[in-house]
Length: 64
Figure 1 (tube, rainbow, N blue to C red):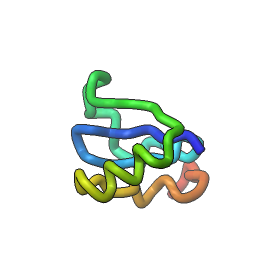
Figure 2 (spheres, helix red, strand yellow):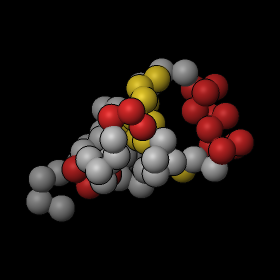
Figure 3 (cartoon, helix red, strand yellow):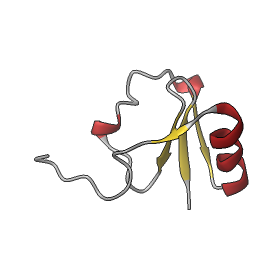
Figure 4 (cartoon, rainbow, N blue to C red):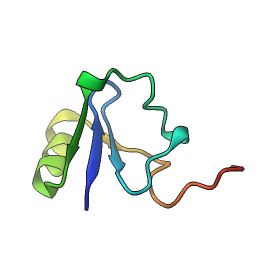
């Protein structure tokens, strides 16, 4: 799975499901990262207190 990491807000997004509700648009580009390494994501969660985005668990619909 591909991930989109917001280092400013310490959030991990599932790249396939990321959308406007995730609130990453205010994050500068230099604070964003794409990765497919699950071990790296687990490290961010365990050692750096990163959280999974609550909006990236499924496809976002336009009228929600």
